[in-house]
Image 1: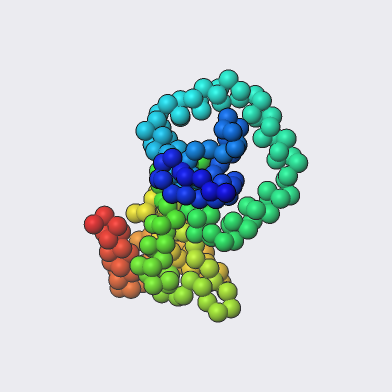
Image 2 (image 1 turned 45 degrees about the vertical axis):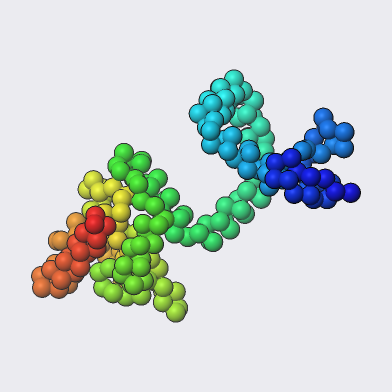
Length: 214
């Protein structure tokens, strides 16, 4: 049995695979096919976003206690599954997780925290997957080093978690991130590499920061 969509006019099988259910109709199926119904709903949401958001806020305020209890009950009953999903997500999206972790650290100190996963990936790509200071590959064959989001101006010195203050440094045995710690960059570079090499490294990193502002 076929039926014609009252929106696009196409004939499709009169089944729940092609039409949403609607108890008010004789055959129990909506007049619009699923693609047309989805498009209509999307257009409605776009045109009424403020009204929809306000209704959502009002509902939450009126039912905050019940909603909170439902969330707590769900998390208590599914704690293990939730933890597993979060672990799998962090493993599948390490850059997003790193950016989120750094933003939380900055917010605790009431510092700017706007770094995105895309901005972090740009930093990795800019330095060709290598440490911005020493040039060592951030992911070597034996996994002795990893990529660290280094606050060029440390959090303890007022540096925020922003694209213009985060650089990829190697972390691991004798890693630059391990050595730098909370030191200010210029003084640390001179101590570790000497004045001449420190000047070159600083120029390279400043050029990266300048590329972000372009």
